[in-house]
Amino acid sequence: QKEVEQNSGPLSVPEGAIASLNCTYSDRGSQSFFWYRQYSGKSPELIMFIYSNGDKEDGRFTAQLNKASQYVSLLIRDSQPSDSATYLCAVNGMDSSYKLIFGSGTRLLVRP
Amino acid sequence: GAGVSQSPSNKVTEKGKDVELRCDPISGHTALYWYRQSLGQGLEFLIYFQGNSAPDKSGLPSDRFSAERTGGSVSTLTIQRTQQEDSAVYLCASSLEAEFEQYFGPGTRLTVT
Image (cartoon, rainbow over all chains, first blue to last red; front, side, top):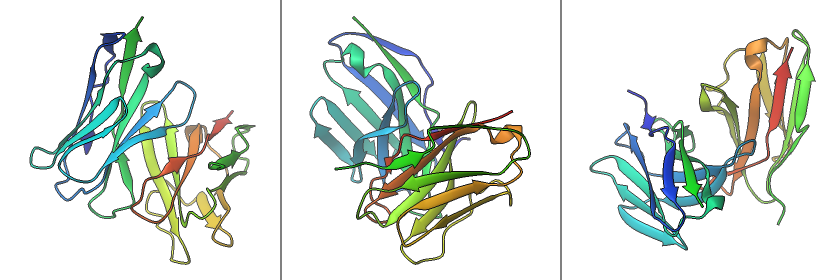
């Protein structure tokens, strides 16, 4: 079992819809959870981080964390074509709090 | 403010040559990380520096890889006797302190021919 799992996609949604991206992780000791957006040929860009169970909202983005289920998700409201990118979920590892373990990413396509 | 910077942006080298990749972290960030991203392998941790503490080198794939950080700021990743499997994008990140959010630089795309 991979430490951080994401559906590779592509996840295709129409413009204006809500895009829901999911991530599961295997280490119950993980405390920090991050979502990065990566456009093709570019480096990852941090868009959300969450440390506590529940929801965290920032603009059109909402991160949701459920530590009991070892599940973290990212919702993008009012999706725009410019949101089309690969979204990487990252979780800190059990053996070191600073070492991020990345999922393989979910490719999101927002259709105009 | 200025983000993480890396140089060169692209590097093509012949198999067996040594290469040096440079990273300049965000000013004031004490923690610095190197990652590698290659097709089919995702993003993998290489090495971590925090202040004057000994670096965590647990992610370095072989002893051909080394890194240093001078003066708590700029870092250099060196790959000796490059191999084709070293071809990847090498990403540097920094954070205010360990465990804080990590911000990535633009990366160096290394191609070994």
